[in-house]
Image (cartoon, rainbow, N blue to C red):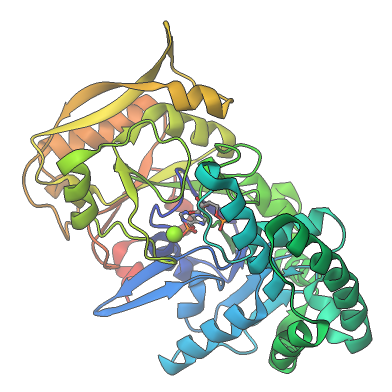
Length: 441
Ligand code: IMO
Ligand code: MG
């Protein structure tokens, strides 16, 4: 079977949750490979809305093996909270969930450290979700982190905790004027979770190798987006992990050639939450209208998202980095009432025109978007399920996008509900046999 990696092509919030939910029936195993509970993957099923943060969205489907890979950072309290919330909604999370013993643990001092660090940056703050994601990865790279498997041995956990608290209790007051709490206070919070987490802890590398041998189909579920990637995004205004498809191999512990196909998820416009350059920001009434129509508020933090026009240099860059085989175009219905739609095709940088997304963030900060104006369709398309039923201008919009990215657009979303989706044949997704009848529950 072919494995697929689903990746955000912009700055996160592209609609990966809906896409993963649609695709899950065709897969046996779903794996989160990076990030943590900074993600907010919204899945709308009928009148119920589920927001997944740390668990793969596939957990909403009975009988799928769900994996949290070594590349994820796990806050044990957030994990248990999410499991409990799902259980209250009647969704079973049990022996189908496996959490990598090698994933790093987000400790309470990570968010305390992050709050101090963000505050001290002032205007140049990152605008993080303040969930301890960055500091946890800092400890991982600094080789002092605590891993999920370390929670299983009380002595090992206490030793690592003592080393970390000794360090944090010097750093926090010195750098940020904050007091660290005592070892006992931190230990209590985490130790209260261990008994419930222990049954999920697994050697995920071995588990996935076995699944691969058995011919299981694996879905790698990316969080955030290509432009928030720690190496390839708009550094430093990025998250602290490799959100691009390349991260799936290292973050799940599978060989690179186990990631057979990559699906990029993009909105028909752009959004960004948190700080950092955003060349195609709409501003003014248009931005407010799109924000309201698209419900563009953070699923994790509730912050209003900045809204902008579709940015082709950024999208081409994401396609290049991830090697998209196909594209899922989300929220096309949100552009419905416009007579004209602007699309950025290049940037003006000082006296030159750039068609490539610049590698330097300071350069991007100076870039001005050069727009083409594409004709809008100005007709409702919400809920449309057939490409041929879209108004001509909407079909032309999709085709022009495919032509400029040299990519097929396999999925078009016309609403938040599972059924408000167009799945197109011959557009890179046929291998998984995804007729609408199979994906609608
Ligand atoms: P999903 O998976 C949108 C942003 C934050 C901030 C930056 C760093 O729902 O698409 P972090 O807390 O990760 O250190 O914050 O990254 N960010 C997201 N933006 N969607 C997300 O996830 C995000 N996860 C992090 O707003 O700018
Ligand atoms: Mg989000």
